[in-house]
Length: 148
Image (cartoon, rainbow, N blue to C red):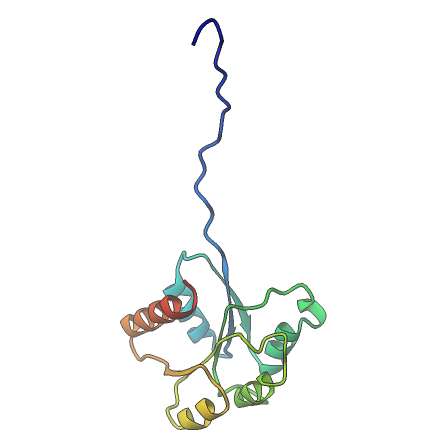
């Protein structure tokens, strides 16, 4: 270059931030909530916990305190909940256009209702693991299938 000064713009070098996925965990057992949290670890996943079916409906329908809630990318649903069983969410899901496309995975300790839940439209039915390594493997598999 002849006599011209070349100015270089300073462009900050930043890494793109990973997308933060939204997980709605419908679970009333604090120990199971903790296992999911620990298995997810530091991954970019925001966990919203609903300890009862009414809270899950309010979250999904953006009612009350959940008016600004994000649509979850995945719902993990325990079907053995206090007051109302999780199967009611599966029945109502078909009629709710706000979240009809959200995968709902039944995540429970019982094997008894597998066929019924799948017939009601559950995306999958997974039995809760009995060991810590099982929890890690199961959550990793769910993340790979639904949140990547």
